[in-house]
Image (cartoon, rainbow, N blue to C red; front, top):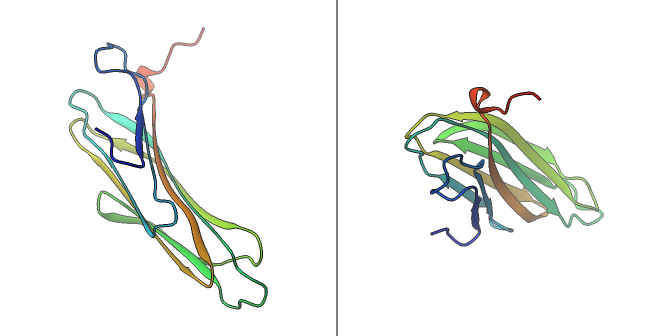
Length: 140
């Protein structure tokens, strides 16, 4: 059963040829998003990971507004950035990575957002499965 804010799309387990998995968590304006993809018992997978932080609400004259994003994959920090937030409209940070997940291993992605002088609008984590080279459809 999926947790609130967590969705998965793919083929039903009864189908022999599984559709690519798609996992997503939307933390809204909360500072942490955690995506847990359970292990697959029979096949290796490759996921395209995408973490996005959207901020906004910096008013004119708010000097020193910043936003930061830190990403951990399977407990290890993969990326971290802190940048000045653009005045006025929305601003963002985004991180992407392809990750191979061996048979029987889970994938855990955590995103930590920090803001100063602005507001978090949205923090999302997406894992979309790509076809392994040996699973790619033949050229026609």
